[in-house]
Length: 173
Image 1 (cartoon, rainbow, N blue to C red):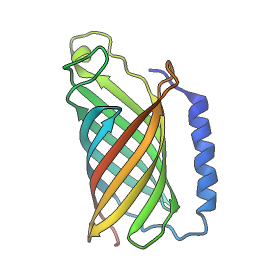
Image 2 (cartoon, one colour):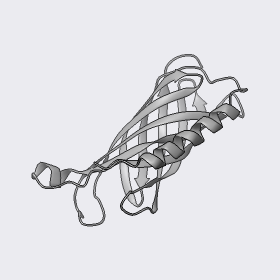
Image 3 (spheres, rainbow, N blue to C red):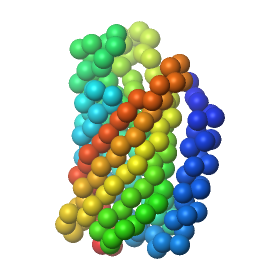
Image 4 (tube, rainbow, N blue to C red):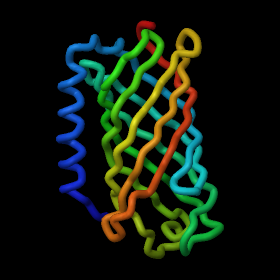
C-alpha cells in the first residue's frame, strides 16, 4: 500500500481552518448514522454501507464499505471491494434540517479476482477530500449527497467520486 503523507497533511490543515470558522455555530445533535449507499468511483458504480459515529462538536468518523461489479483498466469483468475512512467536519448549518460538511480521508479499491487467485492486487491508499450535504426527509431518516476527488500517488490526477445515501440515524432529532 502506498501512503501520500503531504496530501493528507494539507487536507488536515484545511479541515482545521474550516472547523475554526464553524466554531460559532451550534453543533448538530450527536447521533450514530447508518446509510445505504449508491455511488460512482470515476465511472465505476459502487453499492455499499456507510457508518458515521460522532466524536464531538459536530465532528464524526466515518467508514464506507462497498462493492463494485466491475473495474475498468486491466481488470474488466472483475469485482472490487472499495473502502473509505474519513473525518466529517461541519462547516455550515443553514437550517435545522440541513447539514453541510467537509470530508477528509483515504480511499482504497481492491480487485477481488486477482486477490483470491493469489495474484498481485493493486491496493493503495488514496487521499480524498470532498463535501457532504445532508437533508432531513423524515424523523430518523436523511438523504445525503457526497462529492469529492481522490488522487493516486503514481498519477497525480484528481479522480472524481460521488455517493448518494439513505441515512438512518439514532439519537435526538
